[in-house]
Length: 613
Ligand code: ADP
Ligand code: MG
Image (tube, rainbow, N blue to C red; front, side):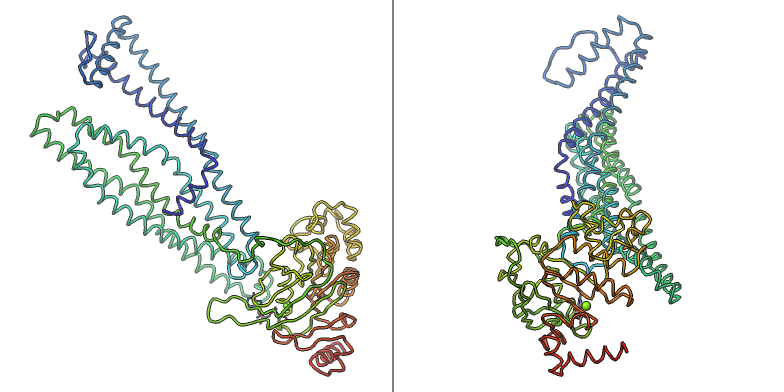
């Protein structure tokens, strides 16, 4: 139930709608009750089944009897004046008007509550998306993409359908039930108390089924997450699947998940469908008990008349419909709770990378970027996390180019990822101008950095949008200037719509080299003092590599850069070359100094010239 109340907390901005809704519902109830209480005595008088009250009644202490008699007296008077046929016509008009008003107010009640029903999903959706943009990268290596998407879509839909469609009932039915209940207690406390002894039994049964329903529903939503993940993988990995004739494998896997989902959903629906018949059976059972016990009261004692007993049953029936609706709603809520718990898991996820409480002021980068005894390991679920970086000591002075080389897996990417605080330094410190990066606001820190990695991350938007990502207010001239520096202007003008061309999903309509030049243009436009380049050319063929490398050189001019290079020839003239080996700095120096050392670097260089010959 906790997640249900948390969802209701999202209703706070819409409390005015709730007030209106309750008001309109009350009016609706009043009109339906009033029309019936008015029509019945009139009909009774017209057809002569009720005896008219001929004298103006006196108040004898019984308020209800007094009101009733006065009403009958007044109606009787009017009837005499207008005649029976006309009275009948009048009754029909009253019925039409009363029911019109009742339905009008019922509709107005729904009209008023609609912004709440849709608003809660809207607000949850926004909160989820904001949260996803805030969470650290480490969260997403552990979470599957499809499952996240499923939480943002199908789980929200489930909440919308299950909880929010029934939310209105919670403002309406309890009023109805309470009112009828009061009447019941007033009519016969003994009988009502007896009925209430049965309620815990009924409640027990309803909750047991509800709990089991929630279990199935949680399983169903998890399986939906799996389905989404697999769909996402099938779509993004289509090339590989086709190339390896892996369609049967994928089909089989998907079919198994779909069938498991099918079975779970069958169980979910069968359990939720139980709400209606079960509550009706229980209701009738309770009703029979009332007839049995109440009937004996009528037969044995005289203070409970037969008419009163029938009225009692009618009022009890008034409770049944909303009670049935409420028990059905409680089942829906159980289903919805399974989904909302999955949503809370994301909204409650801790973000270990936070902005400092008391940020230090940092204006422009002026001295150096320094790693001081930095160690790091990735979090792992099973066993002890393995250290990926050990005691890294490295200073990158302003204006210098530092290259990181070393075998694949030696920790180069991990090291560069620490600078923008994509991951948090574990031991030691990362300093920028002598300030710990944890002490300056993330936004300020990241504003100093330009990042180009191996896979150029482009969005399914125009060329202009992609280049101006870090500076959305940039003019077309600025974008073009950046594209020229990045050797991208020529190919962009050759595109169908120039800078307005949509480049497809992930830049799929462009070649690898073109994509990379767009990401370089993006970094050029942002104009950051520090550059992080991680194997920016490694995925390219020789021809486009030359163009991209040329663009990179232009980008690095007058900047401080940390460059991970897969091709050693591109960093020969770096101010400092750092050779990484299994998470440690093995050697450090200029190209010539390192060659003379005849260590790992020399071996790497020889290996590469051997390969390229
Ligand atoms: P390089 O860029 O030098 O090839 P990386 O920094 O990518 O090396 O990886 C260094 C080590 O960290 C490797 O052993 C790799 O398996 C591990 N590693 C990289 N990324 C992750 C991750 N997200 N979670 C766990 N281990 C990782
Ligand atoms: Mg790498």
